[in-house]
Length: 321
Image (cartoon, rainbow, N blue to C red; front, side, top):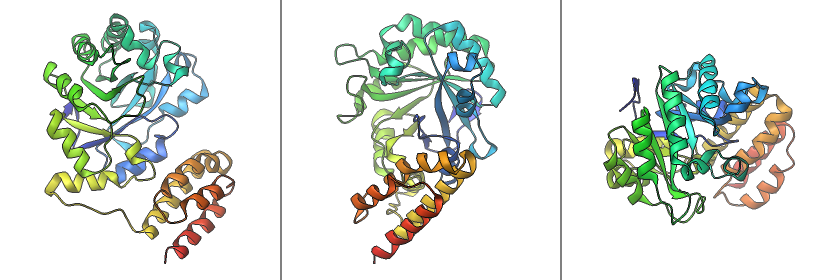
């Protein structure tokens, strides 16, 4: 598929998860077969003020292409200015966040709150698309709540305003991340517009990816929580969609090896002090489903040095036999 003039050679993309989809994790997911990645959302106002945090969120590397940076806000002019500033980091695509349910974002008029103001949402896309020569995409939810399911209307508005693709998370803001994703609304959006549609929600393996593609007609699937502590999910998805091969979860030795490589790179990029504190949540996800995971997670909470994580990984492997 293509998003504007950008070729996406594969089946699955990594979602722009705040606090998770940083440069280290994006590079790792591309290594395991992610066809496209979207960075953590950055505030348009923060970008306009050139703050240090925004620069970190927007930074991309050659190892994670094609890649988008994602911006959020509720002022069309500031959003367009931020999108132009973001070009400094050479993204392939600019993505606009209209799906984040977090109170600190939606409560200030950005993210999913824009779904309550479709005219403003359309104006934001229009201003960004007009200012840029590269593709502008939009990530939305099915609606704000059960009585305002308006993903179809918003997707049509985005297309009319110049968006090159729309990602739909099939839940309302009210639903957050449960119950099961509404497949039907994604299918309806796909039928309503002519630009590519990316299906998002509950993709955890090859079978769920195929179901999303088959039942909705989506051009691509986007994986979020299904990749936490499991960057190899992209390898599983690619294998299943290619010829129906079902790849099992990696052996514990492999899982620990990937975890250590992930956390070592995190420490290299951010320094050991910050890196190890961010590593705690990732390490806990890598332990999911392993015998004794609860006690390992308790140990993880107090990790401060990379060497401590190495020792824990060796203990996990030894206890698995």
